[in-house]
Image (tube, rainbow, N blue to C red; front, top):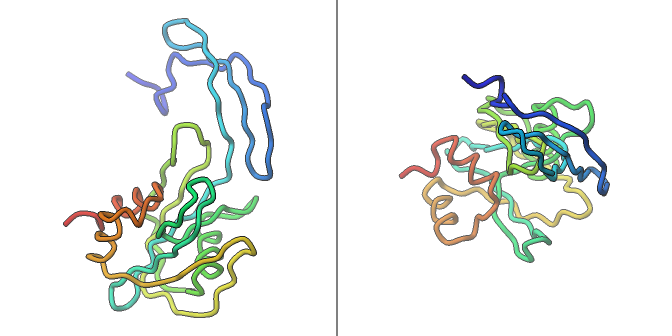
Length: 181
């Protein structure tokens, strides 16, 4: 039987800081594995993120399109953003949704949480937001966003055509059953 999180038999022997850039911290962690062997693993400490799937009254979904420098391309995505220190997931989600899209209020329901990759410590907190009200957006200075509402079939088409490639958004849509025909 496995312990909490399946960590049974693993132990941290030491760690060192490799680099820090703004909100990101790269560490190298020395671990003893269940078979007694030792190995180094890279860990990237990142803040948690709130990710929202906003449904308007007509059942369309609000998405944002933004340029991602690491990919050198734009992608349609669910509105999302990093939580500030001490900020709860829903409070951060409400702030980010208003900043990125201008939408506020509505009925919020926590769907779940997940990790984006095995390297990152930060979690994505997923919320479904029903019937938010429009208002003015206030994106960050580095965000040049296109905000648009799509029907569920149109969202599926964006995915099929490779216009939505943001992994956390795809995971969130899958968790909410939106990608099922």
